[in-house]
Image 1 (spheres, rainbow, N blue to C red):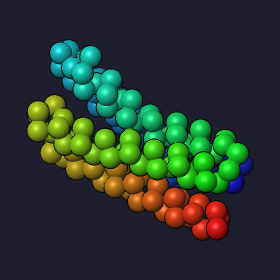
Image 2 (spheres, one colour):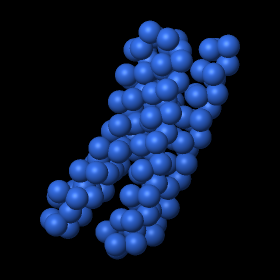
Image 3 (tube, rainbow, N blue to C red):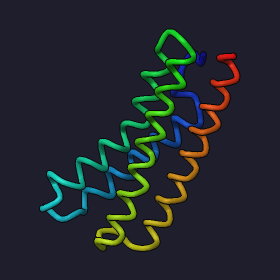
Image 4 (cartoon, helix red, strand yellow):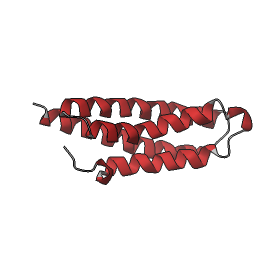
Length: 121
């Protein structure tokens, strides 16, 4: 297992996505303060949080399970940014940037899961 998951590119990319989501949601309408804003933030920070939690588990199998949970949270973000675009809370350009970042994170998570599966054999 990795000594410090925070050194992995997938963690750094996920953390960057969290910061982007926080900045983005600062400008959402007030009526979303109990709706989409906390949901997007929670989904975003769940990605790196699950990477950290999984990396501190006792087995590679457990770590891989948490990577899967992180992938689920990343999937939630993909829909939430689409919803924010369709509600016209974000421009098409910002949506495209976030979508690209999401796709990078999900690809990295998939690669990490594959790597952990190989180690578990």
